[in-house]
Amino acid sequence: RLVELLLNPSPAVQTPALRTVGNIVTGNDMQTQIVINTNALLLALLSNPKKGIRKEACWTISNITAGNKEQIQAVIENNIIPPLIQLLTNAEFDIRKEAAWAISNATSGGNSDQIKFLVQQGCIRPLCDLLTVNDAKIVTIALEGLENILKVGEEDAKQSGSHNQMTTFVAEADGLTKIEELQQHSNNDIYEKCIKILETYFGVEDEEEMAALAPNMDGGQFSFGMGDGNQQPFDFTPQGP
View 1 (cartoon, helix red, strand yellow):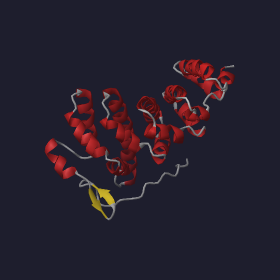
View 2: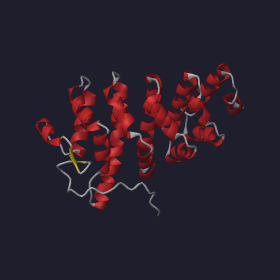
View 3: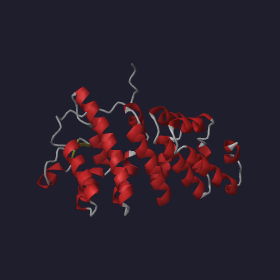
View 4: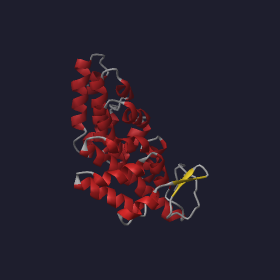
């Protein structure tokens, strides 16, 4: 019945129906799965002309991506990620905030291949762009998403003995510079998270090393001092069993 209401052309009907669905998916995994199984992930809602509907749709999706890997996969398979990242990139700020939660939640609960898919779809730059907004919570959410992405890159780098390609992607999106600048942020949690990211993934031990850390362009690619010089193209091909 809720799905029928979501298809109603009237925003006065759609909005409360979507809010109800969003509240359902804040429950347990079984309740969320019921919503997914009834095809309530309606792609059309993300392009609805009414701003409030787009915002509610992002909020609902963020509650689903806070679920398990199967539920994140359902979002991916319903082709939700591309328009979600479009909204994260170009929408009004209050919609971008909800989209940021949806993407960051997916990086938190998703597996390696799912997170690589998010990267392939272009989530890094809009997450980096949110690092400069005047909203400490959203800056934190963006940092957490980027940290989860960098962690996947680090795991791949250790397995292959190569450079963490995700650090290059973050630097190319001006994320490294913005993370460095956030060390001056008045929020201590943001400051500590930035220090952790810089030390763990960019080889920084103290602030005096910042100048040496700045990425250099070498043959059209960013490179860092701690790498071995062997820049391997990033492979997004899902790994089979």
